[in-house]
Length: 259
Image 1 (tube, rainbow, N blue to C red):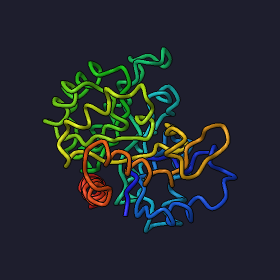
Image 2 (tube, rainbow, N blue to C red; image 1 turned 30 degrees about the vertical axis):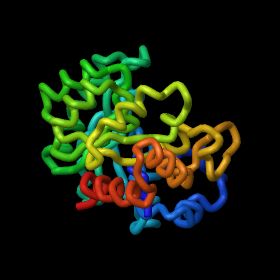
Image 3 (tube, rainbow, N blue to C red; image 1 turned 120 degrees about the vertical axis):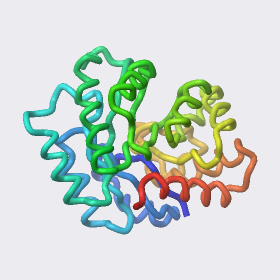
Image 4 (tube, rainbow, N blue to C red; image 1 turned 135 degrees about the horizontal axis):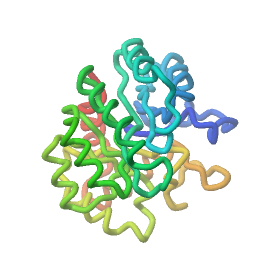
């Protein structure tokens, strides 16, 4: 059985795709962490969690790209939603230096508030960090991360990985890293301790190359049911049986998200 540590199953890009949940179950995926990205989709993630409590672990947060949108009282509303779903995490949140807007000065206060809330409520935190490692570590210096956190689709260097590992990070491997140009990322995952690696799809985003698309969607959208093929290829890269990697990554994801 496989565990998808990060997807956006509620995303409108998957609306109209028939039988998404059924396809996920047929693929042998036991749990999914479904991440919101703004207050606008918290209710969509909550609905999935209510309808499929044995499959969906909800995560509610504000993505750095949406950090200029929060309305007054957003943090109190997030706090209330987390109490309503006592097994939920906080995410997707973080910092992004790839985009010019919103500026880092806007992103960081929203991120810091979510770090603090995750620590106060002892919830796992899912972090997006893109071309922003300095900003991430500055944020951690001001607000230490909670004991359990995932760096989603980690694409940093080995030195960055080591700094994060010492803080307790788990590292998400997505199918996007199977593209030929991502060999440096794969090399880092070869060096990571096996007990820190989790698998994710980020569906409907971060689509793997065609050979690892069990379910092909229009416009190169990613399907969560692609996870087993992604896991099988990562197992080959790491030199272990796929069943062993499924066991390890599920245990790691449960250690991070299930409590």
